[in-house]
Image (cartoon, rainbow over all chains, first blue to last red; front, top):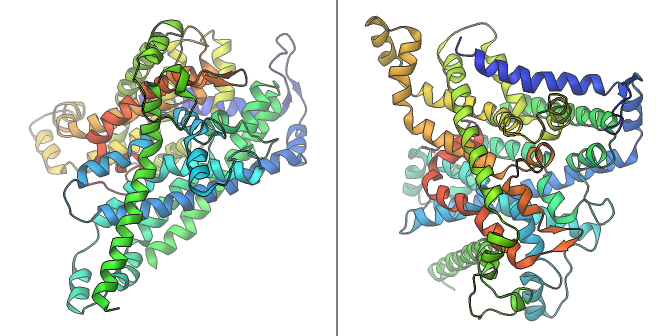
Length: 282
Length: 277
């Protein structure tokens, strides 16, 4: 009885649309065909997508992006979590300040950084030029554009890593630390042999969640590079959006969206089954 | 060098790196806010740090390209989403936390798959379905879509909060002759009030910052802030000064809630997998 309203909503605007997409992916249909019925084409859309290089390029870009931003945000988030888990004055304010990026609309984050990294208008290229004399353009080459996107996304998401890891650090047992102090262990030894092993499950959760979130990236691609230069930073969400709502190939878009969805769920299930279980045991 | 001197050197280096990191982190926000007060003549010049502050950019977004409609709409939508997500999600969370039934964990996981799914999977069919029902560009459509997006995390999170309530309290009420619904409404709900507030705020923020659904499901009748902000820099060009003013407006809730939410956000983002307290 308590479940009914939620289930109705999830089925009505969650599951029903899902089957709608599924059905659509077996038909030929464009958004502009207002008076033509769907035409059944079997697996044609899937065949097209599977053989379409651009789809796999986008999948590759998505993975590169996700791996990059997950690692970078983890490094920054963990460093800050270790730092801000110590007791000192002003800690609360610092903690609140560093989580702001996470609560800003990603669209605003994107535009903000597009401005700050802009070769002529931007603060960062200007600083680099005045300090080192070098001219850096952040969006010109495919590699730089991808790097910049990873940087931007890591800036937005490191607070997530920070919060998760901080919560983990604060829930660690006290006893091993006390024993280590008594034994005269150095700070590095304590970190390496006590903190790190104890934190493994939390680190695994943090990395899994961030990786899953990164695979869905859309907003900053739209606002910063629009997939460019060329299609060098085109991710799956962006490619599917463009194909569906700019080129009106809803059918192909649906097939791609479903392949995308299954890849993510498959990854999540595998990760939860192996890595997470292993981290818990280890 | 003695070991002590080495230690001091290393730890001061670490603090220096951390300090630089913190500055680098805050700099973009500060720069955007600073630029929003720059006069038009110097907005595009990064080397200008000292200038006479002006409200021109804010006047621009107040009257020339008014931000009022997107701001009001976003407030309406985000508040409705927060209320609806809680109204739908909390009872479901209660059932998942308190009742034993077959397939309960499978159901919980199934709900979670909606959270894992890329929004683009849902935005295509929702666009077509809402179009057919004549609901495109209405509050109903966007509020329902955002509520769907929030429901999985609201359910998972409220379930954690409800589990923290000792069962004995509820059982005592049952013995006093309360019905299940009464126990939920009169005993459990008041006890999880802090959780409700935190999760409600998170749902509000997630709706406030959402972009893809807003872009596809709304246009003129409903205009959301993220779509408005994105319109300042397109292939047609950039309206820089006013854009920084609009961005500044869009980050106000973030700055307010960052201080209130600190602890609760952890749970919110990890769906309870890691506790914040």
